[in-house]
Image 1 (cartoon, rainbow, N blue to C red):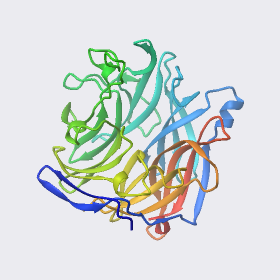
Image 2: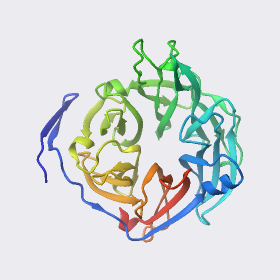
Image 3: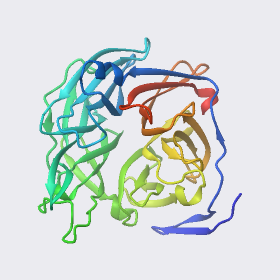
Image 4: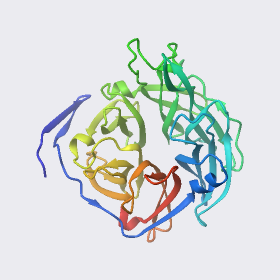
Length: 388
């Protein structure tokens, strides 16, 4: 084990045990592996249709189906008119049963949706909606405020797209994740300066102003502000984050604009109790863990996301995390499975199929290699008893 430096964190009266920077994570690559292209870009290109299939998010519609929302655009960003589409995918037959565009405004970009499950069983898809504008003489993507649709029949039909609106006087531009605890939904969402009275994302010197990540809650009647997490976590600008319930609070994973990946333990009011900087601690987490997702299976806690190890290649990695110490116990490389250079992709979400004896980890993600013009939406399947 390398010994580059030693750091002790003191947060909210709790001292986190010192750790040694440069630690190695034991990695493995599963041998049992299946890959399926669920939606191929070539199919849409051949029809002269929007073929940039990106940013999938999933939710269980019912026992046999997951709903997959994704952008149907022309590029990673700046593609005005890109709609959000939802596919109803049968996890038994591994086939798409239906597809539906749920938003299609030619002046807007429906960049990415995030699913929330409400206590009455209905589902909502909350969308990061953007518009290309000129801001202080610069071409920029402005958030215009989250919009959402709902479904009460597992994706057979959807409500019209509608604005989320302001919560305690603040409008949000991007919903990251949500979890239900005792009938209350807790959500991570991000503000943006262009949604404030300033109407710009730049300061007087032309420097970008970053938004803040906030914890919100919904009790079935109204949304309310819980805590400014950017401030609570020390003030470093953060973007895409995720959370999972843990004991009497939550564990939150953050993606920092400072190119750092961190895990935080917070109580039920989102006051921080413990933090760990994974990028500083581990050699094989070279920067952020892109679009992180936390999930629990059996007695294990896992962090899934895009990662760069020493090779410098973009990889999809699964990390097993000790829930008490927040240390990474193991890493698993889930993709790519060949020498392809992935240049865009690996926003990923899991679901499980099969019995305990034959448990299968399924990953829905998107991926574009250096030889392709547009990414595909793919399903990766692993033997969980080997991959975990």
